[in-house]
Amino acid sequence: MNNIKTVLITGANKGIGFEAARQLGALGFVVLLGARSEERGLAATATLKSEGIKAHFILLDVTRQDTINDAFEKIERELAHSMRSSTMWESRSIKGLLRASWSCPF
Ligand SMILES: NC(=O)c1ccc[n+]([C@@H]2O[C@H](COP(=O)([O-])OP(=O)(O)OC[C@H]3O[C@@H](n4cnc5c(N)ncnc54)[C@H](OP(=O)(O)O)[C@@H]3O)[C@@H](O)[C@H]2O)c1
Image: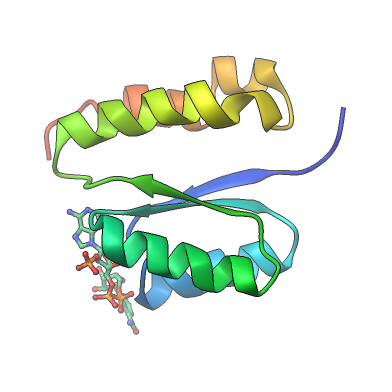
């Protein structure tokens, strides 16, 4: 089992979110860049990748349940297998946050 950690950051295409993604990525985290605009999110992801950071774009508007559900599915389908521990994903990490916290109305 490796020790690479994965972090999901919402609003990560600019500002504090982007800088947090950049700094965590530079520390070795795999960064899931959540953004509500595909264009802006992909551009930010490309910038971080050009800096050598392992970054993946996730379309995610935190006020839209459909994008939350899609983000959950995408992470589980495409990325969960590479996370530090599938047990962690199954129990209480990003999956838990998406299910528990974000299922509440804003
Ligand atoms: N900058 C500071 O010094 C500072 C200090 C204390 C607190 N804060 C707080 O920290 C937060 C971020 O600040 P910031 O300066 O980084 O702001 P920012 O540059 O305006 O960035 C905000 C980010 O949030 C995204 N966003 C907005 N609504 C969203 C939604 N519904 N779903 C997903 N993403 C959404 C934006 O995406 P789009 O590009 O699509 O709009 C953008 O990526 C704000 O709440 C701010 O009040 C900032």
